[in-house]
Length: 338
Image (cartoon, rainbow, N blue to C red; front, top):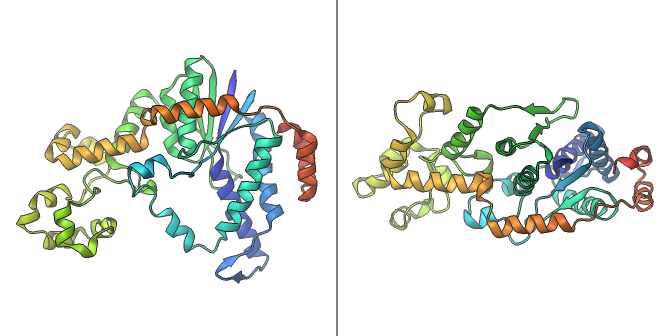
């Protein structure tokens, strides 16, 4: 059997951004700092994109993987700075995210109730977890799995047999990228991710990110909770640290090399990890935050249970009713794709 697992959040977000862009071009003015978007346009864009997927990838089943922050994502509960910058960016945005999330909830309910898509959503888990766990399971069954996402982290699933990854672009006008990697490239990607972290997700280079000691925080209380700002001023750190904090000074030395330089360096990863226990601690943390095999076993089991319980039968009359209520007449011709 051939299945498609879809990362839903980027589809929601990109089409919300697109809808707001259209509203701006039409001259809609800001109210309380945000631009009001057309709800029907947003819903149409989401369903239009989803309607293409089953035929495009020639699959028997489409699985929609949802982020579910209820109870707090397990990664954020494990490491409180995980994706710490996302909320602040939304608050500064001209997009009405509150209204957008209401539309997403409404669309999600329709997808769950009235389409043949298997909608998988488990509290504290992200779409990444769902994709990794299910693609591994299907691989063991000898089935073929296609992953559709914008997130480059999903290429880790290529380590499972019979898995392929297509990464979408920022605009639908461009064809998705079919990720093809050699065994060595996949191995390098894992090492790069564990050493250099992921700035977008808030965990960084093993030499430049960790929590300060209680002693340091006591001496420099103004920087509590502002580690990132302090790291970006690494030249000032040299002046601030004294011999009392020399151990931490060495651990937080600003990294001056990228991945290519790291590969060419005579200093091995093993030597870097031995330089300071903080490096090893951060490396272990990065592995847990980014690699598929570190999804907690109890949560992985919940993903499998949730998938087994999903409804895979469509109710086209109800779906058509929803389309008509939202003036989505053009979608009726594609209703069998749902």
